[in-house]
Length: 137
Ligand SMILES: [Zn+2]
Image (tube, rainbow, N blue to C red; front, side):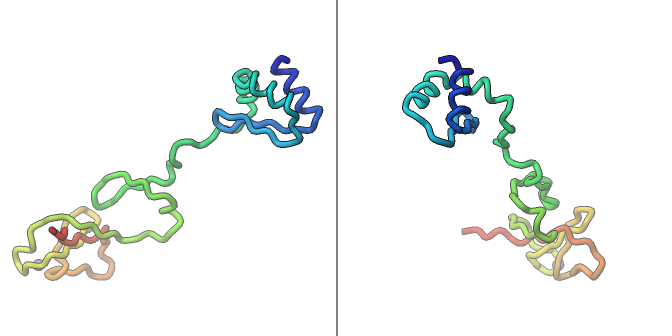
C-alpha cells in the first residue's frame, strides 16, 4: 500500500487521521490491516498530512512575559495580563535609611528609592513598587 492508498482506505472506512506533533491520531473504526499499513507508512503519512495541520504552539506564549519595573528583568508570568496591575514588592539586601534607620523603601516612577518612613508616598505619587529588606537566615 502506498501512503495515498492508506489515506483512501481510511476515508472509505470513515476514519479521520490527524497529525499531533510527531504522532498520527486516527479516530474511527480501524482494522488491523489498516493499523499495520499506517505503521508501515508513518513517515510518509506525516509528511503528506503535515501541511494540513495547524501549527502547535510549543513555545510559551509571548503575552505571558512581562517586564518587571523594579528589576528590569523579563518574567514568565502566565496570565498576568488578566489581573489588575499590581504594585510589587521585592526583597533585597540593602543598607537601612541613614536618617531614620527604616528598612522599607518605595520606588518612584523615575526609579528613585525613597525611604517609606521619612518620605511616604503621597496620593498622586507614582509608585513602581516596594523594597523590603531581604531576610537573612
Ligand atoms: Zn528614613
